[in-house]
Amino acid sequence: MKNLFRNNIKQMNGYTPGEQPKDKKYIKLNTNENPYPPSPKIIKILKKFDYKNLRLYPDPTATSLISAAAKHYNVSENNILAGNGSDDILTIAIRAIAGENDKIAYPTPSYSLYPELTDIQGSLRKPITLKNDFSLPKDILSQLKGTSLFIIPNPNAPSGNLFDKALLKKICREYEGIVLIDEAYAEFASDTCLDFSDSFSNVIVSRTLSKSFSLAAIRIGFAIAQPEIIKQLSKAKDSYNTNMLSQLIAQSAIKDFNYTQQNITKIIATRNNYIQKFEELGWNIIPSETNFIFAKPFNITAEKYFHQMRENGILIRYFPGKNTGKYVRITIGTNEEMNSLYKTTLKIMEKN
Ligand SMILES: *Cc1c(COP(=O)(O)O)cnc(C)c1O
Image (cartoon, rainbow, N blue to C red; front, side, top):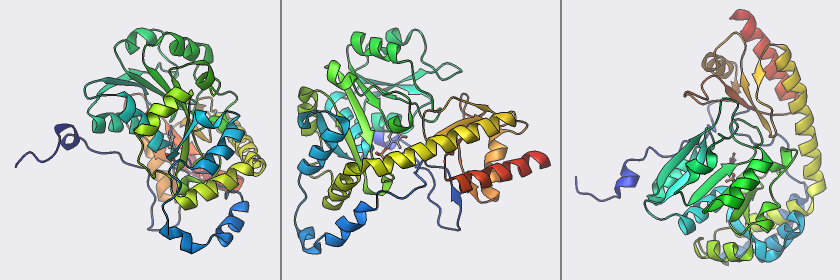
């Protein structure tokens, strides 16, 4: 066959998103969605919206959304760029920073989109294997030598733990490339590195409305960094990368953060409650700073547990592989959903 596509694309399998099944009703704890609805203030915005405006292009730089976001994150407007989800921020950063055959580093296990975006760009993968407790290896800085971009989720996914902040700071200070700290779960964590985006000229922090704000459907995320970085990133984005309705919905949700904060508080309480319950069953749970837990089942393999949960109508996530295959990732749902998960777990463990 004639060579119609770039080799790096042809060799890819492509990213597999978590299941969104339509065959029957599941308790869906597999993609870290928020179990609670977003701010009800959104209803008013949608009712007021004049459909005739849909003929117009949206604001290319999402000015009023950026203004609301700047207040919320306590930064200046020239410190923020809006994206079509934080996945778009990752794409923009890679486009702007990593050339073909430049190396992109990221921890493994972490978000499996990073190596896929690396392949699309034609850059080279530099996975950095985490220790057994999912902390960073001691020789991280020497492993980062020669790479252009280091993408690190903090808290990490799928393991759920926060990395050592002092070590991250040292990396930002000494690394010669750009560090992108993916803070998709920061609102569920006890600490964040948002302040690094102000103090370092080589740091980008990304945030999303998908998890804590319950707005995965509208695809809004942000890059927060010094103005010079934002200026360069802006050149690499699609002209109209966030749409009109999403800009409006996102603004109103951000301005109603008190509502969102209540959901975050509920999820953290549910998480901590069920971590304790599962630990009492003999499970090993990685300390979670997110809206999910990474858990090693007791007396049953993770893979078997995953399949049996599915048969019982509960979707969770299983990542085969050397350092993840002993665990399942369970999104924290409502108390009712978690109670069903727990009861089904007792049933499965008894039968096993
Ligand atoms: C969910 C997730 C994202 C994607 O967020 P969107 O804003 O929905 O694109 C990014 N990074 C990590 C680590 C995630 O888990």
